[in-house]
Image (cartoon, rainbow, N blue to C red; front, side, top):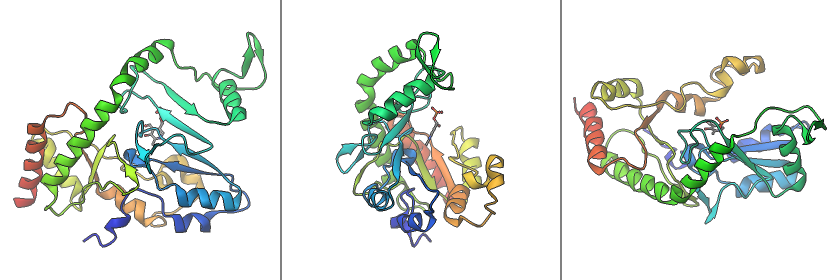
Length: 267
Ligand SMILES: Cc1ncc(COP(=O)(O)O)c(C=O)c1O
């Protein structure tokens, strides 16, 4: 059913990137989607060849590793989200940009604080993107638990994978270069909507990440990328289903969820 399953790592297709580069291209943004690190080496090769910057979107990947090193330290800059539902989340909104580039760091500091460099002195127009200190204090405490929480997510994912392996669906696959920390546990099913309804009727909450790909969002309609233009992501969006995933999930709960998924296919 899924002949190309080895490619199913939520990753961008490297061969297609180069075809899309034009004289106006400045940057490649890599998303470590669901916390599976993107395969970065081939992208950095392309970026060097075409003199492009690389930004890592590590919003979902706090502690995920690429070839033994934590993501967020590879690109010219990287972003992390501390939205409450993330592997490490604040009690409100917060996020971070990390970079080894002094110029980028200075610019980001200006942008987040209305372009201010001295009290009442503004060098440029910026935004009110300051994170509250209380959120920083909460994140500082939570940081101590992150590695342990990530390990628990990995254990949960392994348990799901082993219980769901013989069913006609696709379970997430950890790529050989990756340490996946399962911000989300996303399976693929040709009967996604029915399966989701079935699980919900049994009291099991599910999510869809994501139902509408970017190019079909009303906000990007102006780009004129028609339905059918990006078949891989469109198919993915019609099949993706997120099962419950959080560190405190108990073994019996995973067994129950897997049993209900199996019951769905057996009925
Ligand atoms: C992959 C990805 N990128 C970016 C963001 C944006 O993060 P924030 O909501 O903290 O701005 C999110 C958050 O949901 C995300 O999942």
